[in-house]
Amino acid sequence: MIIKLKNGATFNSITDNSKQCNKTTAFILTHQNRNYIDSVTCKVITPADCLDILGIKKSIKIIGVTGTNGKTTTAAAIYSILLDLDKKVAFQGTRGYFVNEERRGEKSLTTPPILQTIANLKDAQSDGCEYFIMEVSSHAIKQKRIEGLEFYLKIFTNITQDHLDYHGNIDSYVSVKSSFFDDETLKLINKDDKKIRFNKKNCVTYGVENPSTYKVVAYTLKDGTSAVLQKIDKTYNFYSPLHGLFNIYNILAALSAVDMLQIVPLKETCKAIENFAGVEGRMEIVSSKPLVIVDFAHTPDGMDKVFDAFKDRDIIVVFGAGGDRDRDKREKMGNIANKYAKKIVLTSDNPRGENPNLIIKDIAVGIKNTDSLYIEVDRKEAIKYALHVRCDHEIVLILGKGDETYQEFKEKKIPFDDRNIVRELLKIQSF
Image 1: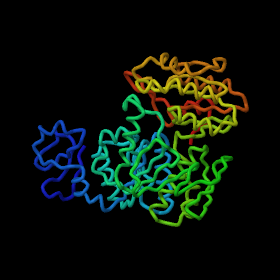
Image 2: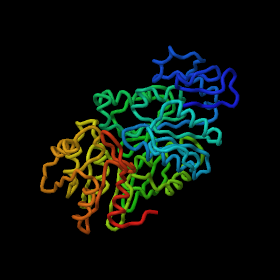
Image 3: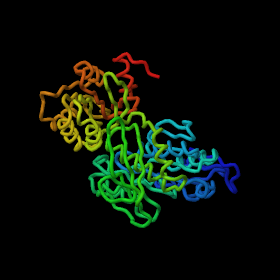
Image 4: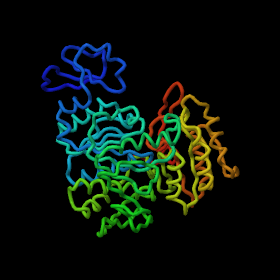
């Protein structure tokens, strides 16, 4: 891509593609394109140089959120609170790129290439944004897709098993995540997660179980979340319509982060969180009668957290696992479903280059109660079956894809949205 400059001293634009180089275009040298440096004849700059030229470092506070689960909800909650506090703010992540409630970019990588992030920062800067909230993936950390960025605040949610197909093993995955917190940047760490390693300088903590700077000391999960937050010797009440203990962590992280920005008293921040209704595809209620919920959970821990939110209910679950990804988690996902669900429907997720029947077979190894198991490779038919066999007191959880609008096979992507399938089958009008 190319970034146009209003007044470059020796060049008028910046590119990360060596083929686009010329006398008026500078080449931004990154970890990902450095193999092409020999073919570059124009001026070469670093991402840090680019940020300096655009004056971004001094004008916008960048807040980065990383962790296995909760990145999107936590980042979106911070974005929502800041908007409610009349701040100009941008948000970049799995859901796309947004500026002051306006969508500016569609869904793509959780963390895009560095020049795209810089372009988004420049765009946000031109709209007067004071804050830029971004999700930071483990892939982006390892591939240095955040090089040159100076974060005002770094936030850690949690670490559980995921992306081991890429990182190799959990120790390597933890090491990559921990490297994000090596420096002396202001950071906010989940005190209840014991895997992460971090530089203790400029570190603030939050938690539910362990002593921390921001701690939830009491809560109820009936009809949403009501909780009491303690900061040092003062307590504050907050309510959220979101369900589940895991969302208490997400909300707490967001409240703590905004409080660390020192914009308004914490009491006002706690009031603002009431307006955050959550993120599409994350514990999204598609139908109330019958109760059907769609969630992105695609790891053993993610599934466990969703199930735990409804542990007092009889559950029918529909799920699969992604192809060409960590096979080790599949049996564990089956085991979690076996633990919580009354009826289990195994189906396709995004099989990619793998045979979906073999993926299902891997999951089924973890399911001991086969009387409760039904297998249907066609995901639409699987959802249809779950809705058909559901009794009045049971809820249907459809897991793994959330707000994705496609299914990915080896040769193609086909349009597919769990939520639209449910609405079609139940004849529910979507607004």
